[in-house]
Image 1 (cartoon, one colour):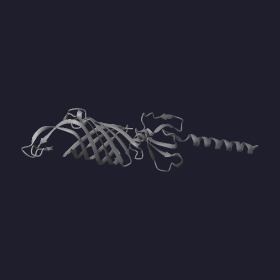
Image 2: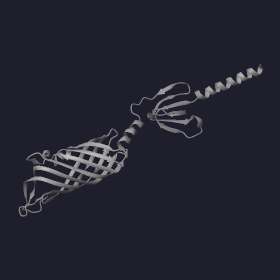
Image 3: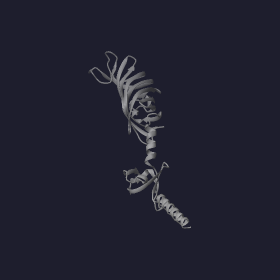
Image 4: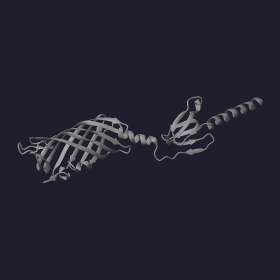
Length: 262
């Protein structure tokens, strides 16, 4: 009989000691549903420091408070962390925008083009180090052009895209075509009948000229600032030559646009 009592006492001791070992640990529930058995050391406004429960002699581990959903302490108390936007969610959105293996489609508008080539709409495709921009503009709406009728331009650029944490640098070449009758101004040489951007001789005259169509070959470059939500700002431009019948004009076109990555 005494042996039975001894077995009951021993079993009871083991049972309560096992329950105590379970209840004596803090439980960290992460927002990604992972559960960490820990011994909480410190909770700051932005971080949580703890040691693993099964390795309390090990190193102190630091995690972001925004990544934690709640903590269940060894005494049964529960502390919830209700942060509207977690760092994990922000990182996922940023990775979606800057993921090199994802084909990113963008639409942007360039209000700065009103001065020279009229307003422009740009469609962009980016994957890994390849970037291409396809644009359409309307020179007849440019502030420095007086149009005799509707005119438009189309073109495309092919660029190398070097990514960074806040966007990327692009550099490449551009080819474009403009069609439509419009009027602009330039320096006219009555001796050879050519037009020039700058004045080289006192005989040159500042005149209005008519342009029917032209081709554009230029270098294309700039920087694209991408925000986590997908909104971006582009600063850059084109430097090259415009071919109008037998005349070649040097052109420099700024690009200051904004858009959205889908």
